[in-house]
Amino acid sequence: MQVKALIRRTLVKEKEKELFSLIQQLRSRAARHKGYISSEIVWNVEDLKESVSITTWRDLNAWKKWLEDEVQKELQKKIDALGCVTRYEIYAFPEFEGDVPMPML
Image 1 (cartoon, rainbow, N blue to C red):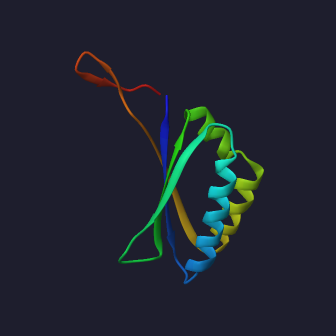
Image 2: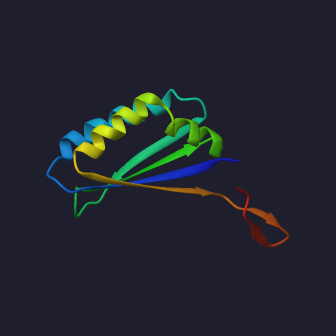
């Protein structure tokens, strides 16, 4: 079952250009990772220190394997070093039993 990972990032310092470059590198690497489907990045129009990456993965296992990728870990360390706070939220479409949505994970 497909999952969507929302990756919220908030910069503490004035390092927007550096963050953008690192996120682009992550996105490029993720696109070659098994189980990756798509992604998009949006920035808060009122505060460019805030961004959300929305990635779609074949299943939860593919997402978890991406988090263990060594290049991903190194790029995330560089993002952390910029003073960036990163939060992950994982979502999936519910399965239904009758008219009632059921958790599937």
